Every structure is written in structure tokens, then in C-alpha cells.
Length: 111
Image (cartoon, rainbow, N blue to C red; front, side, top):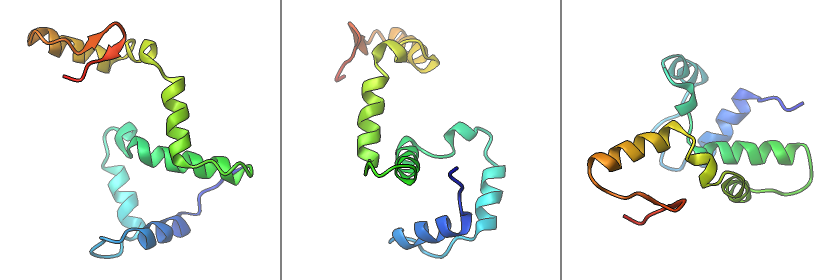
């Protein structure tokens, strides 16, 4: 089972963050998370891909990196899946109000 050593994780993040102005404490993170209304927006997709790659590599010797995780997810989650989401519906409404075409035959336009 994979567990998160929060202090070691925080230390590793701080070492990799070259532009930091100061050290961040664990209690600051806990308080920040408590203030988040939408936990699905706590991190972005790239953060998840990095964490998922770490999880895979902790349980195997495959050497999977975050870029490969992203590529795999993009292949597994196609336009058909996206077209069933609320985001797609909201974008379609937005485009319709403005007489703009965003999606054409299952593809995202360059507009």
C-alpha cells in the first residue's frame, strides 16, 4: 500500500521549487485545503499526472513518467467521453450564444 509521508513530500516540493520566496509549513497547507470549496480543483491535471506516475513507480519498476501518464489518459478519454460532460454542454451554450463553432464532427476547432 502506498502511503504519503507528508513532511518528506513537502520537503521534496520545497527543494524543487526554485522560485519560492519562503518555506511553506505543513499546517499552512492543511489550512489552505480546509478553505477549498471544490476539492476537485485542489490541484491541476499535471500535478495529478506526476503523483500518479510516482504511485505506479512505487509499485513496479516500469519507469513510467508523468508525460506518459498524460498521453495514456488522452488516448483513453476521447471526444465521445468529453461530449457527455457539463463542461462540453456549457461550451456549446457559450458558442451558440455567440454564433461560434467550437466543435466539428467530434473535433475541437482551432478558433
